[in-house]
Image 1: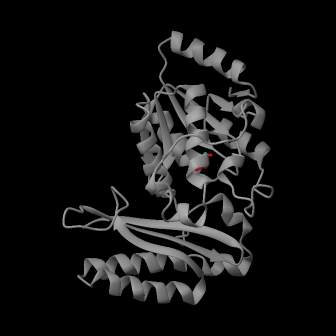
Image 2: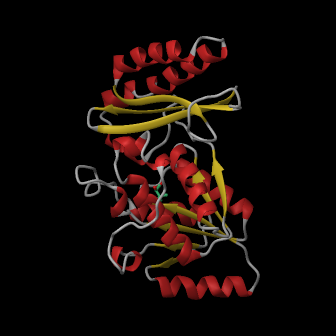
Length: 279
Ligand code: PAF
């Protein structure tokens, strides 16, 4: 039976019990609105540790003023059912006051990687992500935590934070889970109208086409220019970048893996996707 915790104290009492019995703990932080992508993270977490804790917390500090914090999908009851069905041991669902007793100001410096790509379009976003993940890690003290690769920049930034602060938590990632037609699963897909949903899989097709062109030996800037034109047939492009997948810096002779990273708008919905491949 899954236990639901609304307070840090209640959660930590149970975590202490588990640790006293030498149980390892895997943690999957989420903002709710759960879909099969989240459930894949849960399944991986279950394989890697004795106990799995999921958090549902829509973190205000990673949204800017003009973003969808107030409308962010809340499917709490359904989320609870899904997590129970997937044999999660503990659900942590705290209030904003529990997470930020000292106020909302972020305080970890994440440097340049927080200012590019999604960080350029969403100023302060990654500062908020790092702030909440650090706080959640501090509360849960998991042995490992699982993140999805759709938020690829987020994943690298969290790994960087763990190294910077010497945190004793292993970061594990899961590949992108897609709908049958290729659309990357996202809570925000719920915002798409039927027509928008129909064109949305073109994004992944365009990214795969770009990957093929690069693998065929096409010059990257030429291939990206072509991809940009294709994407703009269906979407308003926020960014498309082809970078070193390990550093998110420009590709060099030493680059072993390439990341194609893209963000677009369909109507007012912003979606991201990426393709990572060996050179
Ligand atoms: O990826 C997400 O859902 C969020 O950014 C996270 C990691 C739960 C932090 O709020």
